[in-house]
Image (tube, rainbow, N blue to C red):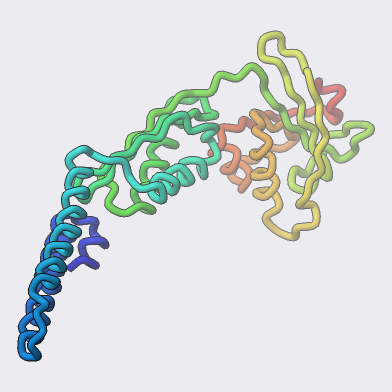
Length: 260
């Protein structure tokens, strides 16, 4: 009964199991006391003390668990940590500002305030809904999940360009096979480039699926736009960037210098 109670997180079953266990130990102690009388050994006081101790221990445990339920006590650290990891696993989540939880009987309630990368309210709603569904699937007995989202307030934007030549800054026609990427940070207020960083493509030698791997790699650099000479429509990188609210800009220029 205790095992089933823990599996379905039922306080009443667990409490009933404790009751049965107290009865079992109490009866066993009484039996020991009766048997001891046949050998002229008086164990009544010791047995009585043991029974009282068992009842006090089980009753105290049930009382504490009951108080936690009545006061909507917080969930255990493991559950809270799992919920936070599931939220941060979403690529569009920049930060978890607040994570609240409570426990009411067998049910768990989780609320979170998160900062999202996207400014599109429709996309933000779908992201929050996806997070809620993932939490319900991965954590047992979650009755309600509420995700409150806010768009990030950015001062700068990061543009990424695939390069086939660093010195001449030539834009590559092939996104996944580009040996380098130029990351240009632009100040939103005056549209001025304030920083440029060149990073190497670590997936140039991958035989298949390199486009998706490169897209995920660039997302880790928190890019806002990817500038290419060809569109991603219907391809793997398109969906990766779409889920991360990264916009694909198409250019006909051959060099980053000309484009900028």
